Amino acid sequence: MNHEYIVNAGLESVYQLEGKINTDPEELLIIKTRQSLLEALTEHVKANHEYDVPEVIALPITGGSPLYLEWLKTSTMD
Image (tube, rainbow, N blue to C red; front, side):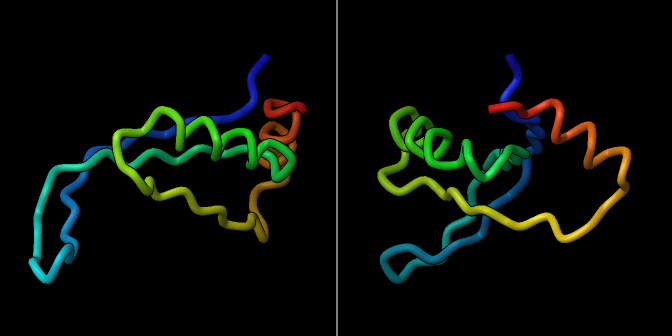
């Protein structure tokens, strides 16, 4: 059973930590899933990520191709 659609991209992250500007390679992971699966997915990321506070954010889908949105809906069943 497929619960999400995953996109992974390499990038360079620039951030401030403890008063210092840092630049590091980083992987951006985009996981497209249903709201009903978000809590379990967030807990999975927190349990398996090396950071103490991994970035997990949820963005609403406010529109898109009807065919794609239907595919996403049927591909991420509860």
